Structures are given as structure tokens and as C-alpha cells.
Image (cartoon, rainbow, N blue to C red; front, side, top):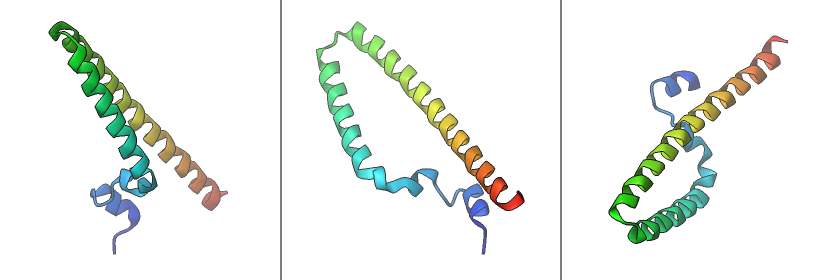
Length: 88
């Protein structure tokens, strides 16, 4: 039987699956976001749509990097707790 860490390493565990209690809330927020974006883009000119796409792409890149940073920070914090519990 593989350990949790091995399962995670081999991609058999998704970090997002571990916090599924937010699934319904996040889905509602995503639906509201999508609806607002559709309403906004309908009102924009072609030039404004290009600018808005550039803006949303930049936001998505930032959020992706920020989420990864938060995951890494949380993982490190958990490792520090584990270290403290077992080695001190």
C-alpha cells in the first residue's frame, strides 16, 4: 500500500478534491462571475473586448500564481507543524 505522499506524487490525489465542502459555494460564485462577464462583453466594442480579454488573462495568470503560492505556503506550514510534533 502506497503512502499518502506517494499517492500525491503520482497524481492520484488532487489537492482541490480534499476541500470539496466549498464546491457548491464556489460553483455559485463561478456562475455569477460568468454571467456578469457575458453581460459586460455584450456591451463592449470590438476594441474594448480585446482590452478586456487582455485584462482577464492577466487576472487569471495572477490568480493562478497566487493560488500556487498559497498552496506552497500552506504545505510548508503543515510540514513545520509535523516537524514540531514529531521531532521536538
